Structures are given as structure tokens and as C-alpha cells.
Amino acid sequence: MKQRLTRRSMLAGGAALSAAPVIAALGSGGAGATQHDHGTVGADAAHGHGGHNAGRYHGHAGFPQGSVPPERAGIDPTAILRDFDRGTTSTLPDGRTLREWELFAVDRTFEVAPGVTFDAWTYNGRIPGPTLWAREGDRMRVRFINGSSHPHTIHFHGIHPAFMDGMPGIGEERGGGSIEPGEEFTYEFDAEPFGTHLYHCHQSPLGPHIAKGLYGAFIVEPKQGREPADEMVMVMNGYNIDGGDDNEFYTVNGLPFHFMDHPVQVKRNELVRIHLINVLEFDPINSFHVHANFFHYYPTGTSLQPSEYTDTIAQMQGQRGILEMRFPYTGLYMFHAHKTEFAELGWMGFFEVTDA
Image (cartoon, rainbow, N blue to C red; front, side):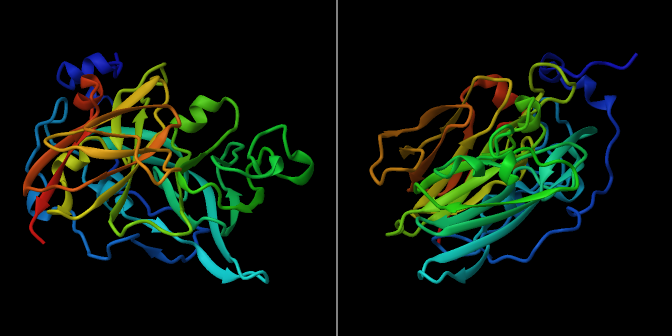
């Protein structure tokens, strides 16, 4: 009899990990992708994957082999961390910047833990989807092509007309409601307000459409900009492997325990700015805690003044914010959910701080 993969079985030692086959090799996303100006925001220094640390922390709860290598999994959380997609740009008659992207829905299978696969619905073949970056007041134009086997939409958290809301039943007369397989629609609106936002599918039933991977970050820079920083995106998510009503794995940027084996590389005393977004389904709340340091927290990123100085914050589903901190000392500093169960099932990692 096939053993059911549950949170309890995972925490008991991962005996159920052998219940699913390993995916040995995966493709890179599918047709329809366009070329964009991908660049880091703020500091321009290159950061690696923590190569000499890779594999150093194997032996996590239920993961005797460590995290799945990105090339095998089909997801690279380290690459996603600083991958800000500024789109293809041009100038409108009124002098404003027009930014254009192409997003396509595609079904993919990922190996999210050793021997455990997840049948996902994705934007552009990745979880989370591309991080879209714009400046406050820019015009955004997003062409969405549904290459999946199910109807989908894109709902952007921001301010825009109703028929651009990606909500089935609203905007059908203009084509902006439910997008059927093989169909497409172009969302167009101004980038406002500034802050840290997200986008996700809003097709019913809503929970599974989000939980299966249809979400991504949407960053709107204030017109005046922010202080230069080592800027990164962390999307907190989970995986419901067995189709039940809870998650068996928890991650940042798509792979459990990835940042334990590939610590986030940062420089001592450099300003670190994290756009933290919670898209976790099936659990009502998530959290972020950093060891041996404190950060300024900007809820939703819509204010230039922080609300608190702390080392732990909580976010409900869809909440997000900006964390800013500097590390005064070199070394390894853990970050994780302050819900022990989430941490032990994948939501933990390290910052590795080195001298500039």
C-alpha cells in the first residue's frame, strides 16, 4: 500500500519520501518566453550561490540527502532571489515609461524534495513566477497567454480598472475575466501605489490555483527611489503534495532547505533590503525571524518610514513588506519561520556574511 505523505510522517523522519519517483531532468520552461532586461536593483555587485558551502548542511529533518539540487529540481531559489524583471521598455507620447512583459501559464512537474515530485501550474515555468519591477507611474502592459490545461487569470495587487482585475465574472465583456486554455489577454494599467506587491491567479477554486504555483512578486519603486541596497525577493510558499487540506513542505522561493545548503551571500555592513511576500495557502499565518540581528520593517512597502525595529514579523496570506538590515559581523546567521513545524519542513536558511 502506498504510504500517505503527511507533515507528521515528514517530521518523524521522512519515511514517506520514497512514495514518489524522482524526476532526473527537467526542461527550462517552454515556448513563448521573451527577452527582457533582467537586472539587480540597488547594489550591482555580483553574488554567488555560496559554492563552498553547497551540501555542507545536509541531514535536515526528513532530508537525509539535503535539498534537491536546483538543476535537478527545475527551480533555483538563489537565482530567483535577485532576479528583477524590468520588462521591455519604450517611451509613451506623454513621456512616461511603458514596460511590457509576456507571461504564460504552463503545467510543469518539479522535484521539490528528494524523491518527491509536485505537479505544478506556473507562470513562465517557475515557482514563484517572474518578479516584475516598475517605477511608480510607469505604464505596465502584461500579455498573458494561457498554455495550461485549465482556465487561469492574473490578479495584480495594486490600483487599476475593474476589467483589468483578473477576476472571473468581471471584465468578460472586454476579455479580462477568465482566460481559457489557448486564449490570451493583455493587462494594462499604471504602476501604483509604490510598494511590495504580488500577483496570482484568481480562478475558482481559488485555493488550489494559488497553491499549485500561480503567483509572483510585483515591485513598484517610488519615484524618488530608495537608498541603494543589496535588494532581494523572498516569496514564502508551501506544497500540498497529497491533495489534502494542509502542506507537507514549506519554502522560500520554491525549494525546501535550499538556503541551508546554499546560504544567501551578503557583505558586512551593506544595506540588505528584502521584499518579503507570504503566498502560503492552507495555513492562516506565516512568519520570518532572523538570528543575531534586527531589521526595520515597512508593511506593504508603501511608506518610506518603518513601522518597527524587530527580529520577527508575522504575515497573513497575501501580506507583504520590506525588511532592511545590516550585518555588523561576519559569519553564518540563520533565518526561518518562527513556527517550528514550518522550519523543520523546509522554511529555514542562512545568510553568510563576509567582508567586502
